[in-house]
Structures are given as structure tokens and as C-alpha cells.
Length: 118
Image 1 (tube, rainbow, N blue to C red):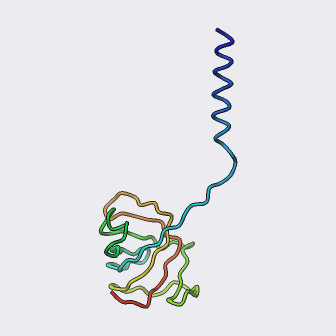
Image 2 (image 1 turned 90 degrees about the vertical axis):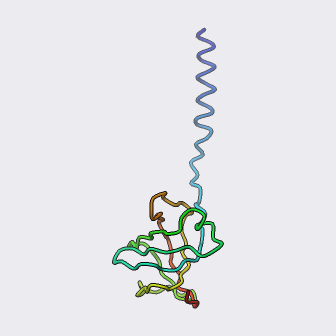
Image 3 (image 1 turned 120 degrees about the horizontal axis):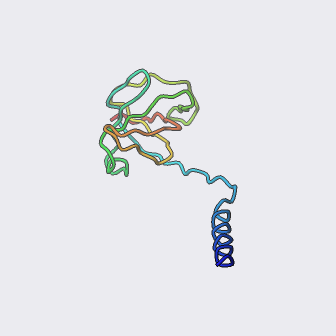
């Protein structure tokens, strides 16, 4: 009985520690196009563009304007936080996770201004 317990413990230890490689997996970034519906001091509410995977999750998404968020102009140059306007089209880069609330919520890494207006 003790041998069986020792073997079972050894197998479980190998499985548990074998899955911990110490390597961090890099999150894959996802980009989608959206139109701004509402501009607030610390957030935007956007509507995902037709055909985007995000639209199948939610028709309204809140994007927090946090201090680590990066902004880029239509030419891809990094800029300071722009003045957003309702109806403006933007591209949003995030980690692919959408909080299932209403409106849905994401943590964006980058916002890119586009040349197109909605």
C-alpha cells in the first residue's frame, strides 16, 4: 500500500511540475475596427465594425483610457492622447479578452486613428 501511494505521489508530482515550464506565454494581440459612440473623460464606448468577431460578442464595448494606453495617428506615428469625437473610426489593439458585461469591456493596449470616418 505504501509503495502504491509513493508511486502515485511521484506521478502526480511529475505531472504538476512538468506543466510548470517557467516560460511566460506571450499574449496574442487582436485588432478590430470600431466607431466611437460615446466619449467620456476616462473611457470610450464603441460599436465594433460589421463583420468583426467582436460584434458577435457585443454591439457596445467600453474601452478604458488608462495611462499605459498607446495612441497612434493614421500614419502609424505614436501621439499623445487625441481628442476623440463621436462617429470617429478607430482601430483597437487588445489581448482578445472581452468582459461579458453590458456594455462589454476590454483592456486596450493601443488605439490607432484611421483616415476613414464612419
